[in-house]
Length: 180
Ligand SMILES: [Zn+2]
Image (cartoon, rainbow, N blue to C red; front, side, top):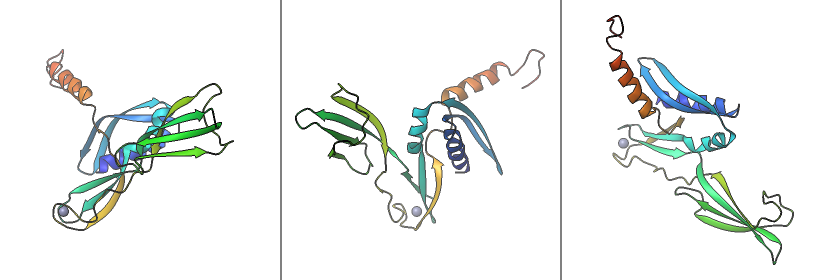
């Protein structure tokens, strides 16, 4: 849990500078953590970060936990109605999103990203999720407490870790016969 709390915090700090993170290897020993992270630039990926954070609802009796994401991915299809001269948007949400699908007409003059001459445009968006976390633990019926927010994605890059282990094995003897 500590690793995921720290990863979420680092991600948020990176996002303020239009950067995002990719955890390579995350370790915890006793009372400290050590994280190996790739930091990359990208405004689009920063926007995506909200879906990588979750609140954690944890059982006080058996430690089962339930994640509540802070944002979910959805797409918005914007179309221009030639007859009425109005723009419409239709949102398609993923599972656990606030709504499954809706359609609404925007009043004339409302700002949209549709360029002149375009009749349709798809936008990637992030939306508030529905609350699907149970009120009690589904395993033992115990009470839940809220923690986080945490990083809800992978905390290791498996391919990177495999290459690291392979490199450690290959270099185990070392040029001078020293153990690494
Ligand atoms: Zn429980």
